[in-house]
Amino acid sequence: MVAVEENPESFFAAAPPLRDADAVAARLREFVARNSSAEGGRRIVCVTSGGTTVPLEQRCVRYIDNFSSGHRGAASTEYFLKAGYAVIFLHRRGSCQPYCRFLPDDSFLKFFDVDAQSKVQVAECHAPVVKKAIGDYCKAIEGGSLLKLPFTTIFEYLQLLNMVATSISLVGLRGMFYLAAAVSDFYVPWDSMAKHKIQSGGGPLDMRLSQVPKMLSMLRNQWAPLAFCVSFKLETDSDILIQKAHMALNKYKMNIVVANLLATYKEEVIIVTNKERSIIRKMNKDEDLEKQMIKILSQNHSKYICGSTNGCKSPD
Amino acid sequence: MVAVEENPESFFAAAPPLRDADAVAARLREFVARNSSAEGGRRIVCVTSGGTTVPLEQRCVRYIDNFSSGHRGAASTEYFLKAGYAVIFLHRRGSCQPYCRFLPDDSFLKFFDVDAQSKVQVAECHAPVVKKAIGDYCKAIEGGSLLKLPFTTIFEYLQLLNMVATSISLVGLRGMFYLAAAVSDFYVPWDSMAKHKIQSGGGPLDMRLSQVPKMLSMLRNQWAPLAFCVSFKLETDSDILIQKAHMALNKYKMNIVVANLLATYKEEVIIVTNKERSIIRKMNKDEDLEKQMIKILSQNHSKYICGSTNGCKSPD
Image (cartoon, rainbow over all chains, first blue to last red; front, side, top):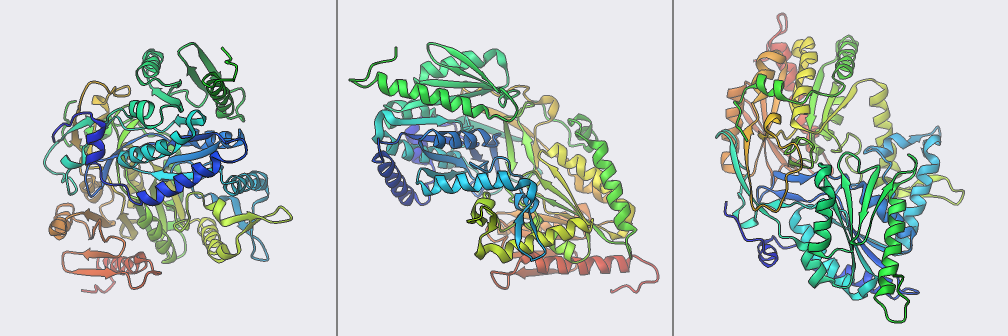
């Protein structure tokens, strides 16, 4: 396999084209236009969620994947909607969905039963939580403030992110990116990929993976330069976490980096800006960490809009 | 990274130990004892389903995965239960589950609504299919003929398969293996695996993957020598499919190999034995291919039991 340069243009040029790109673009245009012209001009956030895959074969049987349940993205989407944002939920197919976080895979078998009149009923003990979920979901969908876009591969993800960013750029400062997806760092360029399933039996398999070009720079500098950008840093080694978060802040000019460790990411995150660092901890086991996170991010986004706008007193 | 020999013993010795191994062993013993002493002595099949993962880091963020929805294993489990088998469903966590095949990820949001009395109701149009699914599932669970065991990594899968095989060996000829899981061919031995998340930024990533030792030989020769064994061969290249199926028949002494192509596996499979080859095609879009498959396999299993038993006339 041949290593390619880490060049966004050549990455996009060589990627397999997105299916239904025109239809997706139309849905995005409609969504952004409608929400930005809603009363007061709604803020719009793109929440990315779940891991991207890297196919190892063109007719794909094997792929490299990044661990991510999508729980954080799904939970955050619920709190962004509650805070009045319109949300573009750019998520891995099959990952955790908003309002479905507490459900097992075969949820409907476990939550429902058939009564004597052979009517399907939600089991008594699960009724309140199921009712609330269905109600909240219907409200979000009817309100037109949630758009779900699925991806699987790194190729789909980056092409979709580009399209979403181009749409969100139209609302300027009111746009936000909340980049919680676990995006592959390494990939096999489509051109140099095995066409058929790699055969076993010939001893060990040697692979050379190229680096995925860092698209945060493109997002910040070209795609949506005015948007408020929040990226995530997940590490397993606490010694390098904060240092890596600061590198991302400076190199990609993020507004905020949310730093977390694999071992504790459900209980604790660190919100890192150029000026300060604050730890958010789960207060009790029934409260979502995302509730506090989205509150702080939303406040920071308000300051950002205010601080960048003439006639609005800067909070600093 | 250092390549290790393809040796089952060294694979197991180096694998991270299975969590809850004792509890799983106890559940298996109870399941097999109860079903084998049921009226007439139930046949017991182990259906493996979904893809295994290969972690690339010990504190795993990245892993190699095999494409498999688990749809075939889930559907086959339903038909084996219908045919009177007890089923050990050894499946990838999060893959398709029996009786849930037609459901979207957020099924309960799409299938149910809250009525004026704020009772949760199944939407009228979905009622028959949901009712049937819940009914069939409850019957299988209450009948005690379905045991679900989940896995994620190749390490978990092979250790569990070993335990299941040891249990099923107790029913001799009445045991069956239906190996539909997409098992990794290559892996990184635990000892030589990166401890922390592999860092990007240092150019391309070179990886050397070792071959997973072929456990079919162990299964056939040592773990459950009398069981009826059905393995699967999935290829993307039709030119090598049948040849690879015959290699598996001979090398691993499988009773049947089910051969399929990635492009058509939902519409067509080829049942390959040492004596014959028969193509099974989907007759109409509403009928599961697995219905015909399980019928043929069950008949072949009957012949196998008969042919190996004194006092039962051999069908040949």
